[in-house]
Amino acid sequence: MEKLYHFVWDEVCDWYLELVKARLYGDDPRLAPRRAGHAMFVLDGVVRLAHPFLPFVTEEIASHYGAAPLLERAHAVAGPDDLRPTTRRR
Image 1 (cartoon, rainbow, N blue to C red):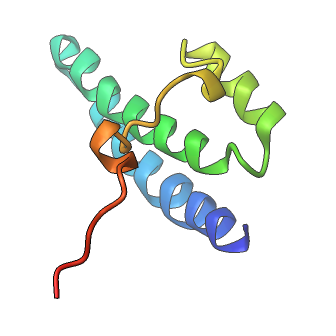
Image 2 (cartoon, rainbow, N blue to C red):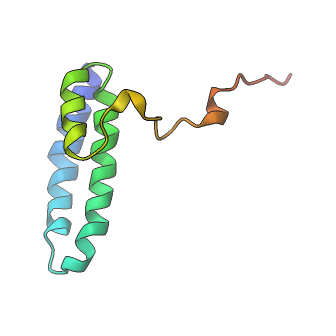
């Protein structure tokens, strides 16, 4: 949990958000939705990583951008093939 905490605060909040603000509020408003989409992807990833540790907080955050309930949605990384047992080759 401590590593996740430091990643969110030290990398996402301190660096990523500061860098993306200039692009989100840039001079071309036509590009804002595309740029905001990437920021939402990052936010969704952080919320999903924190969900096992802070379920009520993350559900509330996800409800504000339409991703709640998190437990009923498939994880973005896992697909049906990821759930099958793998065979090891010798």
